[in-house]
Amino acid sequence: MTNVDSKRTAPVNTSATARPPHVRISSEPLSLDAITARVSDPRAGAVVSFMGVTREVPALEYEAYAEMALQELARIAGAATRRHGLCAVAVEHRIGTVALSEPSVVIAASAPHRAEAFAGAREVIDTIKAMAPIWKREEGEWVEGHAIDPPPSGTATL
Amino acid sequence: MRVEIRLFASLRQRAGRETLELDLPDGARVADALSALDWLTGDVRAVMAVNRDYASGDTPLAPGDELALIPPVSGGAR
Image (cartoon, rainbow over all chains, first blue to last red; front, side, top):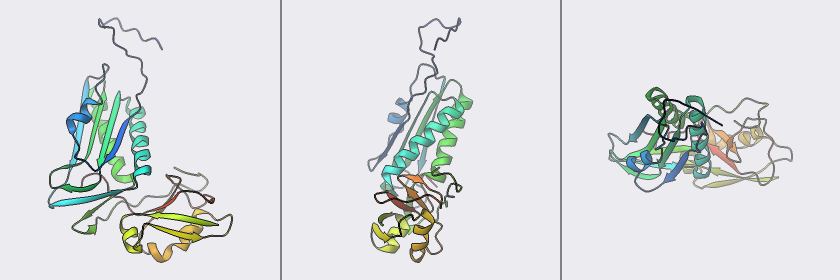
């Protein structure tokens, strides 16, 4: 696709090809710097990064259906990329024991302008909490979660 | 047909194991498998994932499908 912009002076690639999202599930500590670097993009004028951290309790324990959660994270990030016209999205979720104030999830979204970057990052975290097959346990008790509505009959899968 | 169901979080803990086997009639659907697991799910609103996608009750099952019982999710921060 040819994209001519007379205001540009540098030979920057502005074709609107969406990059596949970076997704990872890991039992190692997460890094906001590392994930932010992954969405660096010459078309982006805004990068929003989000970190969800454990609070109030000494630690939380996370469990995932890792194979499906990776696929869900990629689907969620891909949908946000298309809906908000993002340049790139990266998502990492931690499993295992996460100590107080450490991140359990990190998200970065880049976009030409800040409104899309904020909206995209917000959609990704909200949808992960509602849909990704990931669970947490607090002091031995499973946290009451969000029940998933099965897709309507007649559709094979979501 | 015999299918294996993966269990997670509260349901894994409740069952005391990570997988269960079910014997279902040929042509069984997700709703049949969920009914056969009522004793385990009880008041937990669980949904079935078939081959890593959330599935409706009328989704047909086949031997070798990867099945998982998904209790309410709680990823992300609080």
